[in-house]
Image (cartoon, rainbow, N blue to C red):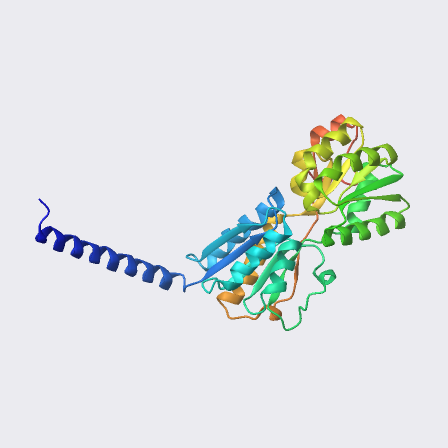
Length: 321
């Protein structure tokens, strides 16, 4: 039978549980200094996932008990703005990590106080953000364009015409494609633009490009990354080389890349965030960081299928996948 004594015991037990939970929460907050970072990722694909993983792993070296609120816009700009607004309104979020250009644009348009650190943004200046004395800093994933075009010429010496595949709605992609086109022409190659606006446009654009060009070249681009297996399959069937700007995409069938290490970019961004949250630096006191690209990543199977060979001039720079 349930008695008054049982009721008192339950009340006391509930009180102890509540006190224990409060103490645990207090200790937890004291251990991490109450720091929570909101992470807004533009979309899901290997490069941006690697940025996020590198960031989260690295920052825990300085702030072991930091907490994260991770949100993914799934490639939708409206989602990105909604997430950025929720981060802005959440008083428990102390800083925001924006992964890729759309995430940064959405966050910067809303958040003017909390620190914003970005990564995987090719040309921050092209976004016309106010970076001087602002709450924004981060790490660019701009590749070395002349080195990439030189690699293309040495790997595919017979190529005369190169098709650029990218989403012209992505500012970072359009900026890099423009630089690539200029460099291709400077090195004596003809460049043809094949800009798309969605994943649905990729197949017809690639089909036409393969009929008109000797090789395909893609800048860092979320749409290309999301459809890389389709593009690589079509290029291989046409016996045309596909070169990309993201090293991780080589494993998906592209011939080669001389891109950047996206996990390392995430780690660089984490060091900036740590300097802000732990050392008290202001974002504008930290210069924009730039990734280092040097190694050439080659898909060995694709190389063999295309009957291509590594020239002696590149042998010591190549990593096979």
